[in-house]
Amino acid sequence: MRSPLFDRQILRVVIGSRAYGLEEAGSDTDRRGVYLPAAADHWSLDGVPDVLRDDDREEMAWELGRFLRLALKGNPTVLEVLFTPRVTDATPLGRELLALRTAFLSKRLHATCGGYADQQFAKLQRRAQAGKSINWKHAAHCLRLLATGAKALAGDGFPVHVGPHRDLLLSVRRGERSLEEVDAVAAEWRSGLDLALRNSPLPNEPDVAAVDAFLIHARRRAADSDALP
Image (cartoon, rainbow, N blue to C red; front, side):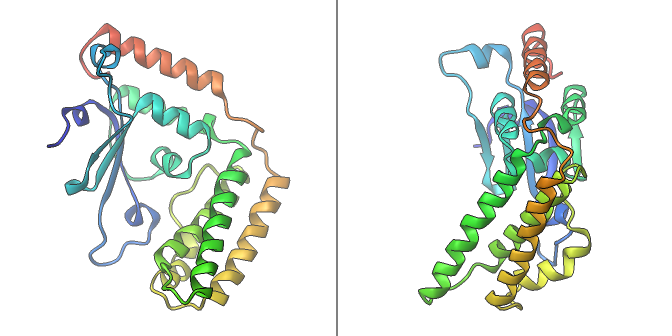
């Protein structure tokens, strides 16, 4: 059963291939969002879930506090929600959240984007050495993350659309490139990520104070009225 808390979303977006510019015939539409529970639900003994899921609709939503904490850590999946060009619905409070999005960007992105990609490419290598099949879609995702991280560290926001990398990433996703070719691209883009860190205009840490102030503001709005702010 679909949770009624989905109706408390302050922000709804589309991410995935349709936001990345990598959609093909039959691509799913991945919907993500952020919800703000009513104060009574949030304060009750039962509490509210950190994450809502509706697999039938390919939809997921984070509780606002959980979402903000993950974004402050530089979680790429969460940051995509704030920077995707495909915003389908935003309440006034949701628009305030979008206006705050650069407060989450910091040099931490080097570790979150680069570290994750390094781990996943190492797993791909181990699978190949063991004679197991390779998830080429995941390989393309890791390459995209390296490119996005480098752009973000250079001060270009957190670009979700792959732009000029579309053809390359699609060929990787389709399994049209060898693992050696993918590794070469990964090494080049990893170097670009490292260079972007050295020259990055981003602060060392995100603006925790601004984000905390927004969360308190949102909680007060929820306490003042049951209507969705």
